[in-house]
Amino acid sequence: DADVTQTPRNRITKTGKRIMLECSQTKGHDRMYWYRQDPGLGLRLIYYSFDVKDINKGEISDGYSVSRQAQAKFSLSLESAIPNQTALYFCATSDPSGGSYNEQFFGPGTRLTVL
Amino acid sequence: GEDVEQSLFLSVREGDSSVINCTYTDSSSTYLYWYKQEPGAGLQLLTYIFSNMDMKQDQRLTVLLNKKDKHLSLRIADTQTGDSAIYFCAESYSSASKIIFGSGTRLSIRP
Image 1 (spheres, rainbow over the protein chains, first blue to last red):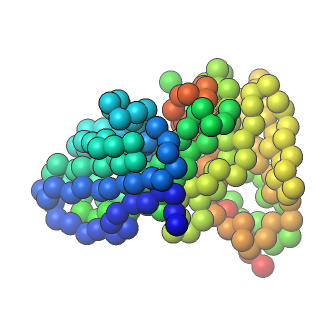
Image 2 (cartoon, rainbow over the protein chains, first blue to last red; image 1 turned 180 degrees about the vertical axis):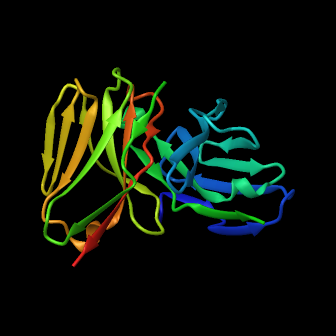
Image 3 (cartoon, rainbow over the protein chains, first blue to last red; image 1 turned 90 degrees about the horizontal axis):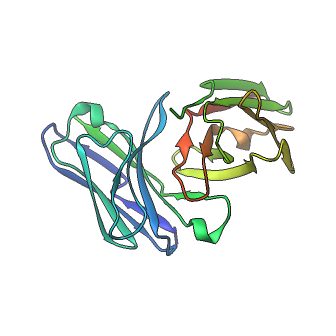
């Protein structure tokens, strides 16, 4: 079974709709992240959470919100989707106490299309 | 601010060596990484190097770090079709801080 799962894997929606992307992990990591990937732009950090009570904005948080419901769950919401939010979204986890090099573990991604 | 740059595309012949280059701006970066993204999948850590090292070798992979020029490279020897992927350079200041990713280099292999 995958350690980091994302649902849905693909989603097509319309402008103005509210969308939630879910991420779950069984790795027991405290830290979780949401990124978006656009061609030629690499990965950009949207939000991150270092534990259940901690939420931090990344470099492109406008238009997004997150909720850390439990250590294992971190969801990303688009309150009112717009076409330029069409992208591949990745969730990731890390545990700096478990290793000295801060490896991040990624989910398989959610491809979101906003029409 | 922090920035990591790499070229977007690289094409090599099967069996040749691939060299993917990266430059970064944060001289305080302690950890430098190479992640690999295969088609339809998330990123996976390929290798990493500490800033106090200048080279790391792991089977077909060689990482070279030039701290003075803030330049990182990944060499893949005897490139195979299974090496086709996007390779991301990344850096972080410490084991507890965020990781900054580059734009990714798409490596394609030609016969």
